[in-house]
Amino acid sequence: QIQLVESGGGLVETGGSLRLSCSASVTGITIHTMGWYRQAPGKQRESVALIDSSRRRTYAEPVKGRFTISRSQNTVILQIDSLKPEDSAVYYCYARRWSGDVYWGQGTQVAVSS
Image 1 (tube, one colour):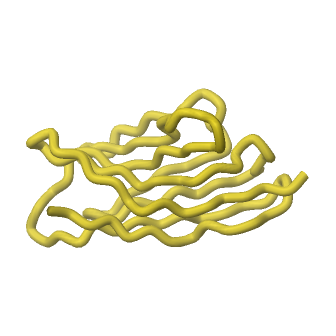
Image 2 (cartoon, helix red, strand yellow):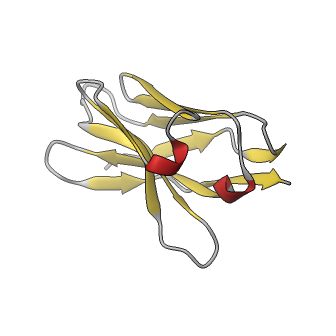
Image 3 (cartoon, rainbow, N blue to C red):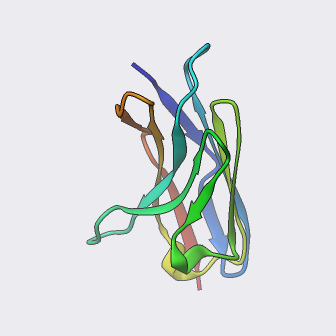
């Protein structure tokens, strides 16, 4: 079992920045893919940014050029710049082990005021 602990959400103005962090409570285990999903009210959860153990990154089209994902061991950071109101959502940390098992964080709220 892996626990994901997130931090860094908050309320910012349009154009502002936030830094989300997520750490997995494991040692001696390499997680294959870590990243972030988000879910806005009334919408489905969607992938935002992912990074695998080889540091290959994938970004959702709406966030390219504004979001940057990085990783050190089993900690993943999402740097969010140039925030827009449509980025407002609950952001969930995601981890997938080589076995295929998937884990989720508890979610952290990002709210962007216009």
